[in-house]
Image (cartoon, rainbow over all chains, first blue to last red):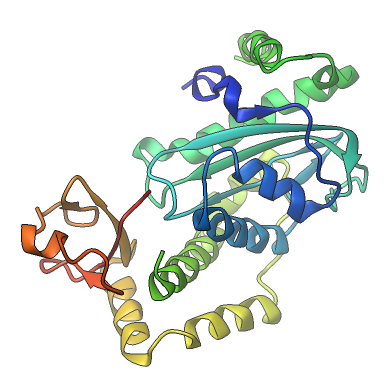
Length: 152
Length: 116
């Protein structure tokens, strides 16, 4: 499945406010869940971060986990123009976040396939910091669609 | 969400994480994508144990038993009145008791929760 088809404009926040890891994850999770389920998902994502930061360098992080809290693959995107210390591999601030959450079992292991796609597209987006250009979620989706075609 | 169900979900999510990272195939894929993975630290595993201890021993024992038996999920969502584990239709009187603390599928024994 295409990432641009999986992502909706209301799942893209180009003005993340948080300046710390926990806050950013909370803002991202809040796009896909409400109430006490936010804390449950946040707890799992933080556990995943303990096993190695999902900040893969060049300003990109892809927080991810499987969780009972979702019944289908969920994707959300956040951008912080200021950048956040996410403990990334290259120790640089992270500007663009892709949150991926999957149920414990998903048909055809879409979780790993989607993660792989996001990693590829994110690498394209990091070139010349293209991810800073879109001004609206719709523009971001358009750029994502173009890059997806390029990396196919 | 009820406290014990929340604890079960947290525990299950951590166990999923550990299991996935224990899988050499999955680890290889994660590394290829650019993620650097560490082995779970003693603190990480201790935190898991502490979480588990918050559950009544009887429930924890059952959780471990079902996890071992089914190898995948011990806690499953209710999907349109069906158990999300064995897909058997749940009895209607059972569904009306959904607010009780912990529910189990009468067929497969998995713990149940209702997604919002």
